Amino acid sequence: MSSGTPIVRQVSWLAVVPQLAAMSGAMFVAYLVGAPDPMVCGAAGYLIYSFGSRRLLTRSHRAGIRLVKRGQFAEASKRFQESLQFFERYPWIDRFRSFVLMSPSAVSYQEMALANIAFCYGQLGNGEQSRTYYKKCLERFPESGLATAALRMLDSVSTPAAS
Image (tube, rainbow, N blue to C red):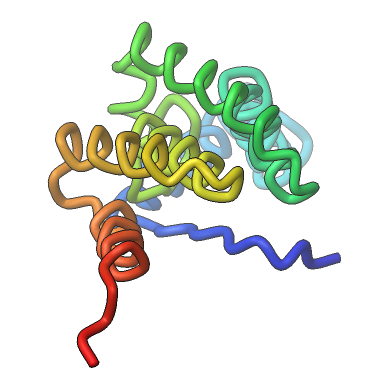
């Protein structure tokens, strides 16, 4: 079921390396403790940790994504604000997300939250708030291609074309 709402995912392939190492380590530990099938037990342990940590620590972010897919942008922006506040309180989780969350995302959760809040305001027709959050995103993450492209789009819409 496609909502028609664009969802962007950028993967850092370098961040996949710790995940492979963690899965291999879990398999090795399962082997050391004499598990009946170390590969299956290690992979299961890895998956439980991976999904569990993301489910627990990115609860607000995931709720925001679900709400965006349903078109409930006002509620979604609140969830993304909660996510932003959480990752501002615990920046080390975001910084080491490839280890803590087993997330290969190339984009930090703080950057995603700011861009998602801006997107929600844009969908609600509040262009100025949208622009403000995209600018905040660029101030904190100058390399944000998503925020740069969105601001260019907002500028092109608000600037009358030359005839």
